[in-house]
Image (cartoon, rainbow, N blue to C red; front, side, top):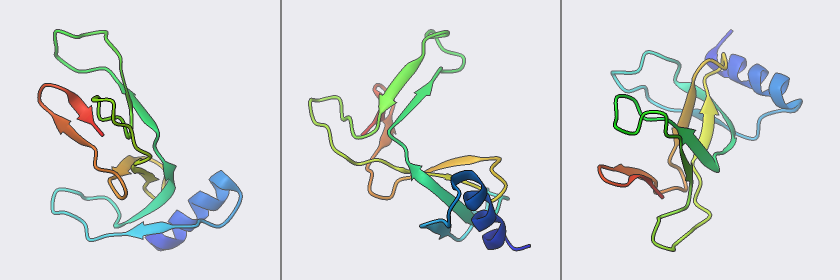
Length: 107
């Protein structure tokens, strides 16, 4: 079964309907996974705890589209998975989020 077939089957099993969108992309040299990803939806937020930091035990919550300066937008990255549902990916399409040294995730 091809990556595309597996991706479509995974989405149908999870959502009960055909996928609206599948992403196929050229794999970077560092990535050994499939070149086909299932778009699950748009990510609205991410929660995380930093490793090896003076902030151990602190959970950060980032709302996508929040630039921290009073500017908020509807920009949200795509939440995707591989055809097996084992890995998650964020694609910046429609979003300008990035990571800064001092502020963490911005946007």
